[in-house]
Image 1 (cartoon, rainbow, N blue to C red):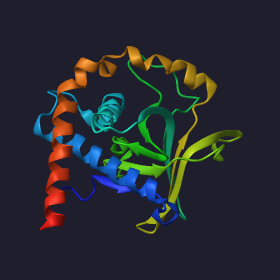
Image 2 (image 1 turned 180 degrees about the vertical axis):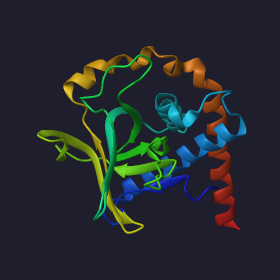
Image 3 (image 1 turned 180 degrees about the horizontal axis):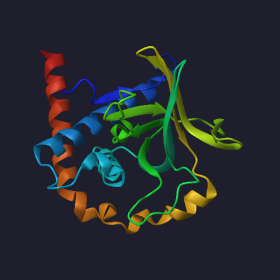
Image 4 (image 1 turned 90 degrees about the vertical axis):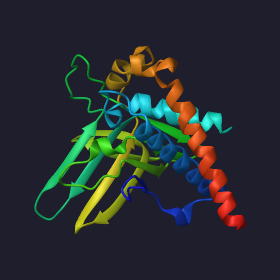
Length: 222
């Protein structure tokens, strides 16, 4: 398994036992999804760039194993701060033009108070080392307010700061501004949202999930 496949970008010391269990289950579901993709890839479809398809798959995998999970539409900003230059990228920017075939939002999965992003790797650039998938703590209550543009504050759904390679990073999943929310509400009409598009992949991934759980149980019993 690629070491950069999945990262838990959260403070595990603050999690309850239930949240730790959700994180473990969520990670297993995301890893099963990517193993299923590797075993039977979509011809000509870069799944990493299809957040709606991936999020719906992971949600359905979790449903198949008896867990209640929801897809969650959000904005996303990744920011790198150094002493000399800042880099950033944003999905859900209210100033972005409306372009044909482009969807200005990001789809994730919420499992309890854990936010799973099976396609976080969309944010990988030469100035960061973003994992293919990631998990974050979902903000409780009103969460925190963050500035995504000068004078433009939004509510953070998940927020994490960390340091790597002598640089400081901030990852923020934020509540979409009203204008962006209105423009991205019809995601259920797109081809990637149709059940037949993902049915076989979800079935394969659920089988992988259960097989890996059986293997883990057998290893513990040995």
